[in-house]
Image 1: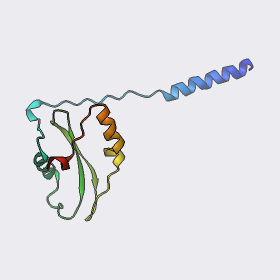
Image 2: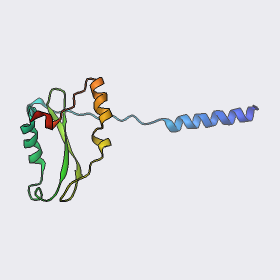
Image 3: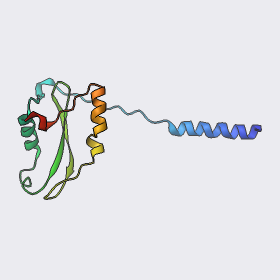
Image 4: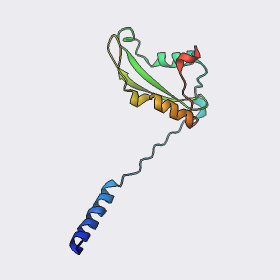
Length: 119
């Protein structure tokens, strides 16, 4: 390989390396323990979720919320993932979880709380 081609390859490699550099993003979450809500059972989940629903449309519009809970069962927050119609709503399982993530969580000792197992 001649010197000119080597130099061009080196330049291209350097440009590629620079284009692959990503900015570091840090998300900081702080909350006080004074306002912490502990989830003990499915009734606690129901009360929290019910408070999030718009009571004017709850009879005719489906909504899907995700509660974020730490390992000590304290609620960290919530997010509305989907708003549907009268018969249902669609949530991308890749956003929430899949069976593989559930199994991976077991390997990493991450507990998945299932509302239906608590009844």
